[in-house]
Structures are given as C-alpha cells and as structure tokens.
Image 1 (tube, one colour):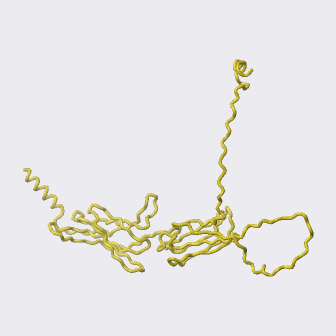
Image 2 (image 1 turned 45 degrees about the vertical axis):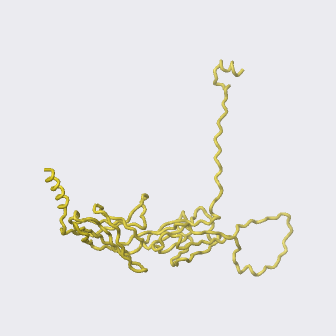
Image 3 (image 1 turned 90 degrees about the horizontal axis):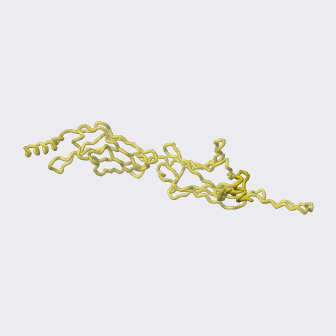
Length: 294
C-alpha cells in the first residue's frame, strides 16, 4: 500500500502538466511606474505585469525581453530568470526613452535540457518623468558700478553756498548677480525641455522678470547676469526656477541672491521671571503674622 501511495504521489506531481501541452499569454503585458515610500515615481524602474496566461501551470520560469531605441542606436536586453509564481517583474530603465517589451514563458522538457519559449504580444512604453535640480543653481554676487555712458562727460563745477552742516549720503551698493548651472545640476537631462528663472510677485501671481534656457550642451554652463536694482530684495517677491520636462510638467526650486538671505539669528527668548514669594502677605493668618512677621 505504501509503495502504491508513493507511486500515485509521484505520478500526480508530474501529471500536473505533461510535455507539449500548449500554453499562451491571453493578455498583452501591462507596464506601470514604480513609486517610492513617499508616493514619488522612481525614475529608473518600471513594473511589467505578465497578465493572464492559459495553462500557466506548464510554465517553469519567465524572462522579460525589451529593446531600447534612442539616438545612440538600438539595444536588446534579456532579463534574468523570473520564478514561475511571480505575477510580474521589476525592470531597470532610462526615463523618457522608448522601449518595446514582451514577456516570455519557458517550459523545460523533462529529462532534457531543451527549453520551449512562448512569447507575449509586444508593448511599447515610455516612462514619463519630470526632471528636477539635484543641486541648487550657483548664485554669486560682485560689487560694482553701473555702466552709464552719459556720465562720461564732466559737468561744470558750480559755486555752492557755504554751510556748516554736512550730509553724508549712504546709497545702496550696486551689485551684479550671476546665476549659473549646467546639465550636471539636473537629475535626468534626457527628460529636460527648458529651464525658466523668474522674479515672481507672490501677491499678484505675476512674473516681472523671466530668463529662459532651452538649448543645452553637455559640459557647457548656462548663465545670466542681473543687478540688485533690477531685482531688489523684497519679501513680496520670490526668486523661482521652473524645470520643465518633455511631458509638459515642471518642478520648482529657488535661486535667492546671498544679499537677500538673512543671516541674523533670532534673539534667544528670555524666560519669564518667577515672582518672588511673599511670606508676610495680608491674607496670612493672625497667628502666622504674630509669630513670623512681627
């Protein structure tokens, strides 16, 4: 009886899927982005869902085959084995790049090293991503004088009445502000469309100054110069930078000049003084006053 039971178990284990039973993918694979713990898209990963499969029990393992097409050419990649019980796989990709994916299910013939693959339909997919600054734009200042050609001509000296009171004006210094960045400041330049710097009126929601960059070259810096007379420090205005992706969305950051950043530390809060305890107050009992306050 025991031998018969053992034979039945072995036969049942191998009769789950007999060689050459056909299997196929019912649905094309589905691609979707992968999110981190904060709900943000991970820019270099996608999840491929294998979908429904007829006679899935006959598959011993999966692989994912995908082709990348960009300006450097075409590259074909085959993933490592994916266990048969997995519903999909996580694939490392480059965002804003066109890929063609297909899943492959493999059956290993019993007693041989032969493998029989069945492929799903091919699906094109591009992971949309909005790039952002991973380093703040470089902002530095230099004191100088305004360039005004009309002041080259010397004016005639006049005779001024004598006075004993002198006033020493203290004009605001003239500052040149240079803003610079390059493609290494942005996480995925392949997704970059343009960068816009602006002087933004917070109350009215308007931009009184904008500087846009839409042409970029690797290793080349992009910069512009303004003055503190053009863009003064004002709490009602903010210095904003918008990084637009090829998908039309944008991310925000700031580029405040050093002279507009307050470095004064807040004064320490003074503790509230504890009122001095009065032992001989009018509300004390007569006996207490007689013993301790007389």
